[in-house]
Image (cartoon, rainbow, N blue to C red; front, top):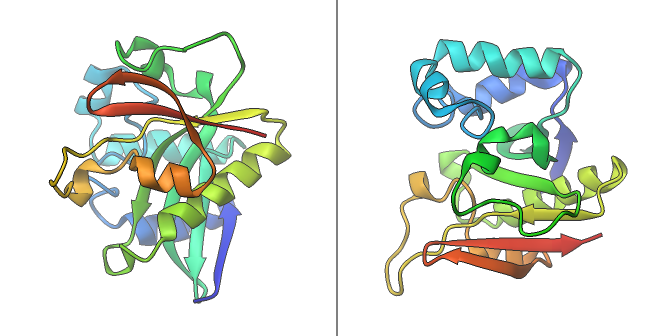
Length: 187
């Protein structure tokens, strides 16, 4: 499968809309979960979150990368400097582990018919490559850890899983809870 990736810029907004669909990826998120205070995020699910995310993209910030297979958008990976995701700093488990300037990978979305094809790893590698071009020296992610023997539902794997990060060359930097890891890659 020919796979390519591109930063999300205003000229690719229609591709993101096609990928996310009417529901905005997952229940009206539009990739705003980590960017807004919780009450504002919840109140904005749907059209308001869509407009907020489009404003980010139209404003010239690249909030992540889109993955394409055979020329069609099949996946999304959010990546940016940690301070572009203020909810991370309000999280009890995902506070900074040191004072290094990191870029954060906060979410993935893969088109339903293309799941379980290894696209998350390819998107993560593309996100790391993009971050490197922007001067990142450390990229970290916050994958979910499924309970032993339990397959995690796709809807709950939006921050990725440990195996994806390991396959992309990340190592565990911290274990803030049973269900969450902080994985890092030095560039």
